[in-house]
Image 1 (cartoon, helix red, strand yellow):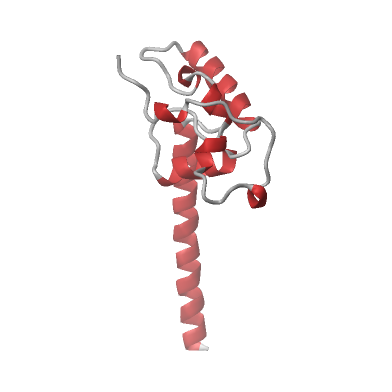
Image 2: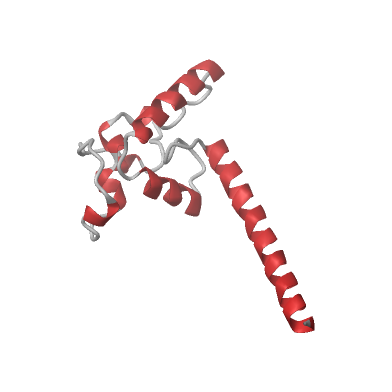
Length: 125
């Protein structure tokens, strides 16, 4: 049987309390504090041919786990930067991450256009 991507992150229990980023051990990888490490990987990754209602229910349960995770933001950024194509990461499904990435790309294009326009105005003025 194939294992879900990065299932090695789902191995050890971690404390459920939130630890401010400034108080965390900066040498430890973010995923050592991930709440999902103590939950079943199946909650975060879809089985093949999963019915829609079951998928939505599973994803909502995974998001509830993410909502109480002290490293949710780091996890989400990891999934967006990689990009992780499967599963719930940082409280977002793969489809939701694609939307976030598309919005970031559009924002970056708009910022570049605005910077070029400002440069042209400054050069002309």
